[in-house]
Image 1 (tube, rainbow, N blue to C red):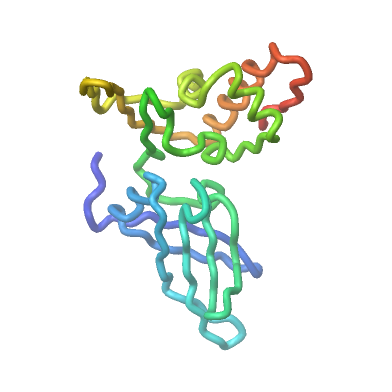
Image 2 (cartoon, rainbow, N blue to C red):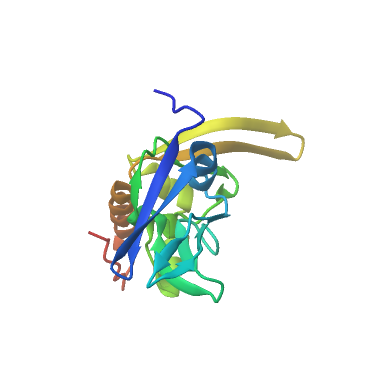
Length: 192
């Protein structure tokens, strides 16, 4: 069922022993899920008789990031990943693009919330690439969108869709461990 244009996604986070919710129009949420940076002013809230505006910033400084600030002095109520928030009414997958030559245009490690040491990252690049790791994850759908065959330049372009970030995180962790397992000194532990 396709959502109507008036539908909204509710994103709820907690700070200060209170829940704070932002209602995002469905079209705007789809852009956020495509990892576009966006800041939205919430409806505001009262705390101890004082009114504060709340500002929700998605994907600034990296994929999947959410920072909720309040007031005008830069107070931060929530800072984390937006897939860790309580989200209601989300009909869309996470989407990002890539190409055969360049690989994904976003860091798949940032999307999954997996941190690699510089040494682990260098070892991983020696044996595989991000597109191959994505293709090992059953939770990721790779959809070819375009193929170019221009003289001296040819490439294939893809759109990636992920509906279950937690499953993707687990599968990517296993794929990384498998890729590093043949290397001496690999210490990577996949997320649980």
